[in-house]
Every structure is written in structure tokens, then in C-alpha cells.
Image (cartoon, rainbow, N blue to C red):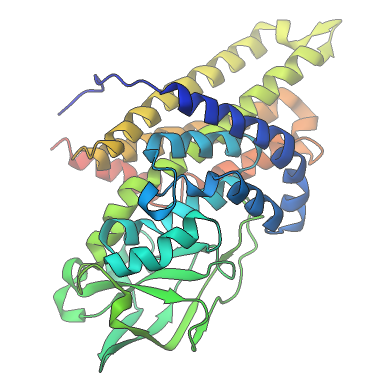
Length: 384
């Protein structure tokens, strides 16, 4: 069992880029957050903004047109955007999640065909693993793929898929050999959105992250060429788990951004709001709440940054540390946003103030890309 003893340094150019992203988030994204949440409207304008500023290139290596700056810089960016709006942060997060299977396991042809167009912002991907009866247990999936000549034919339906109806292609996981079991019987495929038989399905009406579409794609005799297989046939479970070990860092960063954004807003409100003739920030009850909120954000950031550095250097214990970062930051986001609403009192409960939205957005971070119950299992298994 290892301890968090490794030191890391954030390079100055990362801090400069972070500050640029922070200003963009404050000036361009935050003013749109309430509107796109209220309308449940995907912000195409903000996606173009992220592309124009090279932010959508953060998940990619230079050889594929990206920045080549790694997991730490990527998740610093996710955090800054999530402070302003969690749905917009998810645009950047899915840019990584939906391409990680290809980056980690795809053929050179798949990488050359798809990654540069994602790095530029031309293409948007999606990651299609979960199903209505197969969330935490991917081995229960019912979507199937069978070989037909040179092609594969996919049938089934997915659920809870981010970017449904927006994505240009989907990384889809399907059972290719039922007898082999989930460890060797699942295969991953690239399915382009314009393939006959594919439908993005119905969209969900959600509590939070309302400006990011979540849907249930349907596959009816969708044919894809063998060149669209990601990794080896039967390797899909490994592809999915290896992807999630890295992408959970994005959820941690999103949760941390929500928490820090709520803390900052509550602290500013407490300095201005007066009761009994003085700012409520002068009352110890409020001071202690804010102190705990800030401390939890700071602790989460250290755990996240440590995990990101492990990802960048290929640490074999990444799965454990990404699970801890996701677990801690998402629980912190829920705790902190509830306290932020409490500090604002009645104003915190209405949509005129952003902490109500932040509390709704925070909840999903405890659920997607592996529930926190699953994260605890992942961590516990490393301690046996």
C-alpha cells in the first residue's frame, strides 16, 4: 500500500493557461449558465468558443493536433469551467471520455481518422457503455455484435449516454461472444452517427447538467466495418475499464469546480449580506461553514492533482487514486453546495442565484462514470 508522498509541481505555463481559461469562464460562460440550464439547451456557441481557444485540444497529443499537455492541465481546465457551469465543463470532459478508447487501444488508422478532428473541435464523440439494466454491472449488457462477412452488425440500446444527438460518433460496447463472459466477450466499436439503423433515441429530463443532452441510443442492424473495432475483438471490457480509470479524473475535476464555485459565491454573498447590523460573514456559524467548505475543496484539489500526475506518468496504481479523487471530490461537491444554499438562506433556494443550480449539478458527480459505491469497492480491493 502506497501513500500520497510524491511531490508535483504545476508548470508556470499551465498556470498561465489556467488563468486564461478562468477569465473565459467568468466572462463568457458564467453569463450563459442560468439560461442554458433553464432551457435545457446545448450551448453550441460555447462549444465553438472552447474550440477556438484550443481548449478542446487539451485531451490530445500534439501528433493528433492537440496540446500534448496531459491529464493535469486538462483537469485544471475542467475545474475552472465547472466553477462557472458544470454542463459546459462536460463538453470538455466528453471530448476526453469519448476518445480515450481510441487513444488507448485504437489502431493507427482510427486515431488518424478521428482524433485530429476532435482536437480541432470539428467532431464531438460519445461513450456508450451503460444500459438500462447494465450500469454498474457492464457484464449484464444486452447489446450484441455479430460478424457478417467483413462487417459487424450491432443491435441493442444504450442508456444515460452523454452527448446523445450531438456526437458525430459513438464508442459502443457490445457482447460479441456471450459464452466468453464479460471479461473476454465484449468488443468496442466506433459507430458513426450517420450509420443506417442508428438513432440517438429519447433524451432524458434531468435534475442537473440540463444543458448537456443525455439519451438512449438505439442500434438496429447497424453495420460497421472491421476497421471500426477498437483494440482486439473480445477486449472491450478492458478498453472500458482502462478508459474509466482515467476519465474519472474529469468527474473529480468537475465536482471540485462546482464545489469551489459554490464556496466562492457563498463567501462573497456572506460579505455583502447583512443581518443584525453586520455582514453575516462576521458570525462564527457562517465562518465555520465557509472554513470547512474551503478546506474540503483544497484537500480534494491535492488528491486530484496527485492522481492526474500519476496518470501522466503511467502509474500502475492510477485506478485506485482516480477512484479516491472521484469519490472525495464528488462527495465534497454535494456537501459544499448544500451548505452554500444554507448560507444564502431563502435566496439559495431560488433560481435567481446560482447555488441552487450548483447543488443540482453536483448530484450526478456521485453517480456517473461509476457510482461512489463502486469507487469504494475499487479502493477497498487494493487494500486486501
